Length: 191
Image (tube, rainbow, N blue to C red; front, top):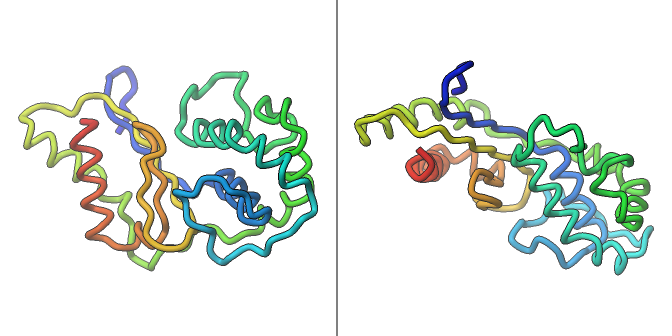
């Protein structure tokens, strides 16, 4: 929780729209990229509307920009822009990715957002987990920030994209015990 004027902790949990768009491009173009992240569900039809080789060459740096943006790094930096928008600095030197977004962006934007099992809301228990960790430590939690990006991907996924950023599948997030254990573990480390 973030209190004005005091160092504290902050956890954000979102559906990662622009991460989903990036994964849509990966799946639609059958790119050999981000193998640690399973395919989107529902699955995406493969197409050859753009030069896959050129997109694949530009992918690694752009994917890093997408994950960096999703993690909340440099919040408030006026030079930062959503890495999937045409005017984004992340696309200035990546014409193949710009072309791929122009061609596939509308379909990517329509790909279903994560839909969790009714009642499953692990994000509601984060405060409880931090309070329990504080009791174990006998002190307040250190100030920390954690971004959790939930994705509609196949199978169980809990992937540490960065120290303060986790990619999680909706299926993983829907498993109350599994997700609670993973959240407790990362909070124990960060707090």
